[in-house]
Length: 324
Image 1 (cartoon, rainbow, N blue to C red):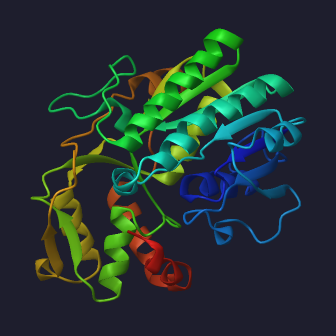
Image 2 (cartoon, rainbow, N blue to C red; image 1 turned 90 degrees about the horizontal axis):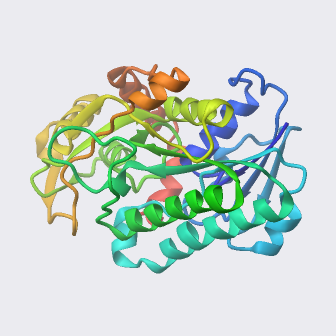
């Protein structure tokens, strides 16, 4: 079994790769993994094992059709994690998001059809649904993205579905809630707040902090992706939820407590443009069909992640100057 993992040096992709190489996925203990990563600011070779005979790392762009045509033959499946993913960066400039997320997905899937790779899991986000005041989104909910990032991910989802319908490519789509865990680039809220606090710096809280997000440990997300790879139906979408909804203010309070400081370390800043108020996923489909359920308790997982950043300043300190 040979797997191609796009974006495999990023936060979620590298966690999936490390788990695969560690034998965490039954039936895939001997799988060989090829990581394709552009190694932009968020792709980091330190996220991957230094040496493993089952791992091949290729630096390249998913928009490079020639590279994909040469690389894909012999692979049994593609796990498509590669994406530009930070909302603030998309607000500042959307062009890289449209290129990587939409054109890159189209280029990758065309190459899969051309080279005979039949199985693809396309990893997306709950942000494609927009914002929901009450209740939770099912997979049939209309797409109403409100940021350039979310819009380009919605576009990539539609491209993926079209390749299933037009070409018969066995594509499944996952839409996950907010992830947290080790090796997350420190522009995202949890690692940014934790690393700021560990450095004795205040944290920037958008607006009044009422915005609500659903949280899931990256390990649970990667288990869900594997379940979809092995048992998910082609052409189907699977929401992946965590069941823990917190306002940004509530999350901030927990992080302050874990870092041993008080609210005096919080600076409220102007709200993000187009900031969605609330996300919430109905993930009953993946639970019923594939037996998914989160295993990592949020409070325990958050404490462990804070400790990881405390113990691994060698990893994140060089990155702080490149974040936004």
